[in-house]
Image (tube, rainbow, N blue to C red; front, side):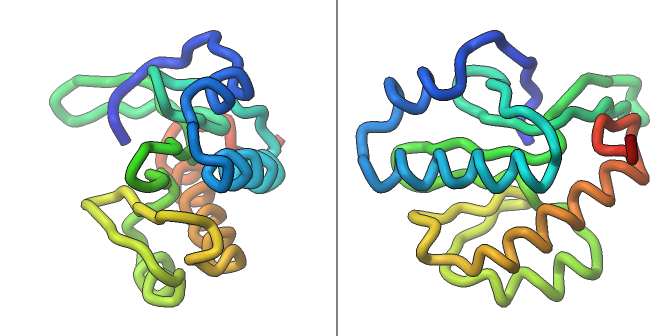
Length: 143
């Protein structure tokens, strides 16, 4: 995920002003509902366009460190950018069953939620939450 910081921008205001497609707006609010349920965390804006849930602290071997959301998404013009993937064996097995998507190193791009299997998305998110909990100081740890 892009290195960014939490902002105080209202998430609903962001969606209503940034997203100009009604289906994408509906899908955005559905993703918020799902990710909030899966993380037990309120949605927060990170940077100018990422909606994140929970947070974790990372530190690289180089000494660079920062904070990032545990999972999140951005309703970009071309497609949703889903920040839900951890490079684990379970995620590699789940990914081919997600549906219609494109992928970069760790970001999944989908045009609309109806293109993917929400149950598989949930499993990918839960695997990412588990990974972050085990490898970082993370708000996703059992409370």
